[in-house]
Image (cartoon, rainbow, N blue to C red):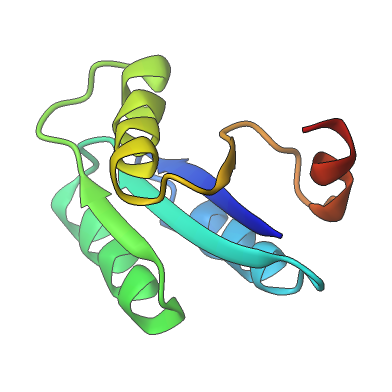
Length: 105
């Protein structure tokens, strides 16, 4: 099963790092982690971009912060255009078992 997970970051690179680490521990799921930086401070955005590169995640930098929904929509558009065969859930409480998503999808 393939699952695209959108992680929205805004000046919270430490939380983003923990979230990605939890996601990477999932078993039995092929993940595509998409990190959307919602126009964070330069140092925070750079830290998240580096995290994405190190962890094999897709990094997308928003040009402006238009809020939570707009940030998630950036990730959703990418997922729909590029990763057409993935399940998308942009709000998952971590830690959870992503295999449970498949039961309801």
